[in-house]
Length: 229
Ligand code: DC
Image 1 (tube, rainbow, N blue to C red):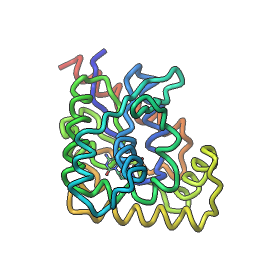
Image 2: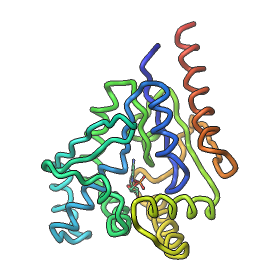
Image 3: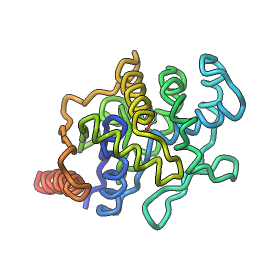
């Protein structure tokens, strides 16, 4: 079977990471959570008390930061910075609060995008993020843009945080989701938007299994087309 590039984009809580991880597992592809790289920059910035408006320092940090991504048997990659596992810390509320600000800095995006393109060139990958189909992998063979209504996305985000040990009320989670929606879609560079050739999938009423099946079907169709052309 051909090793394709699969781009899955969408806002927070649209179900991208759950879907992308499972799609990769079913296809025997590598899953790459691109938000994790922006989160890693945000985490180190917090630890080093770098001001979020200090674009030069953040750019240097993004260019030099070495995040070690180790695939795990359960399909969830683990992330290490200088030998320390930071997987859970990347998803803390503190990181959630500043990550969009970090991700809108052009030089940070350039550094992260270059790292992602190098990984993407290997093929046989499923990448999820905000700009994968538009900027990181514009020639990806399969592009999917996931959406879901706000209440559903807030409930999913709240559950995800709970599973990571952060028990937050829904109004706090809603505020965070709305703030990130606004920052991710209004930024000048690589804003969250579907690629013109993306398949738009509303996951509000779908089970995670149905979302995965839809994407896997799209990939199989593409593989068939490639084999017969
Ligand atoms: O998907 P996530 O919640 O882990 O993403 C964290 C932040 O990183 C999000 O606010 C937007 C940013 N991001 C981005 O700008 N481009 C990507 N490809 C992935 C994430």
